Each structure stands twice: as structure tokens, then as C-alpha cells.
Image (cartoon, rainbow, N blue to C red; front, side, top):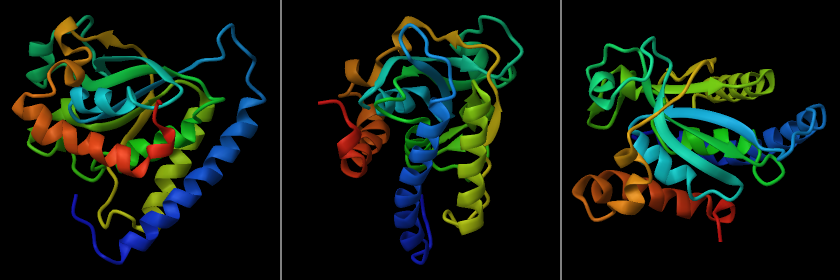
Length: 214
């Protein structure tokens, strides 16, 4: 992603603001009725789900990361159907997270920093509505946090271009075919993994080292 030099300082400030959001999220958590596991769900689309899965699998407090499809009008879609761009579905990951370990605000910070939220229906060479930038919120708190963060980034003009990330309610998730699951870990030597996914993983490990699993 290409940014103006003057926005680099703003990016650093966003890191700090992310922690402010985290504190806000901690207050919100006290109002949520506890569950048996205290785990919450999150669903993000930020281009190819192989990339997204590889990033979030590595975060401490995140578990059960699954690649799949969401946001469309076709039940139980296949990869071929979604790739045609006519199902309305986006490639996404759905996962569980422990808000006591990693807050939703922290997940949002990683979401926006590990892809380009200004390119409509495209990430790199992957083009089509299935590759759109999208947050499917599961709760009102998630909607509030995502909207707040997007508004702040827009006001600060951090990316130099308008943010096109959709923030829409979660309705359903369809797990992708088995060969899509755990893709990067199982195919790290393949060209796409080395050229496209590995740089994202490297950036994650550099910028968010303290949030990775041991």
C-alpha cells in the first residue's frame, strides 16, 4: 500500500489510539453476560481468506479460525460459485477470541493495518466483490467499535484515500472446502504463499510481536 509520507506520523498515533479503544472495549465487556467459555466471535473479510487466516491464526487469544464465505444470498456456496462473483459472498474468516486476552479493538487495529481498505473489491491482484474489505459485526458493541475506528481513520486521513470497508451485520457463515483450511501453514512453499501471504505474516510479526502466540 502506498501512503503519503506525512501520514506515517498519523499511523504511529493510531497505534496509541488503538490502546485507547482497547480500554473502552474492556468497559463494554463488563456489561456482557458471561458465557461458559467467555469467547466471542468475529468475522472479517480483507481479500483472499488464505492471507487473512494466516494472520489471525497467529494471534494470542484467537482460536478456531475458519476460512469461508459470508454476506451473500446463496446457501452453502462452493468456491467456484463465489469466484464467479455472482453470489454476493465475500471470502472471510470466522473465529473465536478471548476478550480477556485480546480485545475487539485490538483485532480491528490489526485488520486495518494488514490490508488496503481503500481499494474497492480488490486486494493486490485479487479482484472481485468476493475480495472486498468488510467487517461483519456480531454485536452492537462490535458495531460501535468498528464504526468509531473507521471514523477516526477517515478523519485523520491516514490512508490518503477514502476507506471503502463495509461494516454490516453478520447473518451467516459457510465454511469453505477443507483444502482452503490452514492453507498457508500447509503450503508455505507455494509461490502465492511466498509472494503474497508471507509478507503479511512478516509485517504482523514485526508490528504486533507482543500479541503473537508464544
